[in-house]
Length: 321
Length: 311
Image (cartoon, rainbow over all chains, first blue to last red):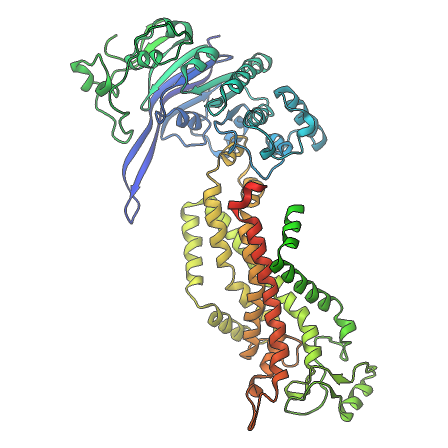
């Protein structure tokens, strides 16, 4: 299992802050700041973190929908971080994305037939008749009657639209799909259906997922490994079982403690973090978490911790360990 | 689509607009039957007499004029000027009927071409941004800073007399509004998630513009275009009135108004004696512009983004 499909090395994405008449750059939003991780073939890597910590930016940068400021992205050993738009097109078939909002991610003026077939058309795959046939098969696979293919997106519910989004991503037979909060906007009941669909599709099409969510219970259900992000940094990565049994980073511990347990008698200690997430334009010196950390030490405000390998596959960036 | 048609027919104002437009279309289509031409070029207005001053409605063709047409070998089917004649004996009725064709031609060709230019420049500018946006928008600003009528007049004067020259001038100074409108809506639409999804699929830039951005942004431009057809015709008429438009005797509403220029007040003691020379061409222009404005208004109501929820 340990051959990586995607390997990210020191990925950085800064957004300029522009002000004034001359639009001069007065600072940078450090959305993603030197992160490195691998996604192995066939696994699901769950990426968690609160809003604005850079999860989505990471996803968009991997797909080159945002240009990385620096760092490298390797896809099956090929560096795709600096190739041009034209060369990137051939990798687009292998790397797909499903977005959070099922309402805005489908073009309201396009029939779903054309939405799903768009990737095939863009890469000149199949002739138009087999395309329609393929669209029918895909719709059936994601649980939508194929004779709905001539309808427009507004005629579907949120869950159905998300299924259409999944069919669109599947059309090109990708090797990897990034699910950017793909179930966050859905009802709880629909959410479990869609997550199960993701699981089925994974074994059927041998997919690799980067599953982004802010809900740890979803991550716990679907992931093989978990990565926790805080303010543009990865603070902990571990296989799922190890992560939930032996959470190490104080931020990750606080996150895990917030997962609701469906048992009224269960008494647990919730860790409430003081303060707000600092601005990514001006992150704290040293460890980015230190102003909110319960176990803060002298060194934390001075030295930025590195991501250290503790156990096999368990990485954490904290001075405690 | 059905919804649009139903809405157009349900509203009194738009119904009037559509009916007026239909009447003008019928006039344009059946012009050869309503006013059979006497010259090989049907846009040449026949003269009913050699009189300098306008003649009242019902004025019969003079004998020497009849002799001229007979020697040309054309059967004379109409020998009365039912709307009177303009200065120089030009038949007002004939000029207005064939002028309808000219009006449609000017309106539709100039608006289509300027919309095409505006949409292409505006969407390239918005989609690619950066220095291209800066360059194209500054060019637009320069064009916008020149007063439309003056610019069109100067250009027509340089190019010479003729309706094609008028149309070139109208297109050259009429595309900026479309560029601005389409740029604005594409700037906001290109941030939509479905555009990003298309990019992730590897869809090429021009396909994204053509299949995602334009279908979602073109409607305000179409509304603006339908309203502009009327004002383009007015501007063309104004140019003709100022003497830089259609050549003498060409069937064009502006020309008909221009013929009336010296006779508007009438003669001493008889104010408004030549009312027909001003009234008929004037009412044609007013109704034509009105019909396009009413249709454009309704289109805007129907296609307004706030009402799009009904879709």
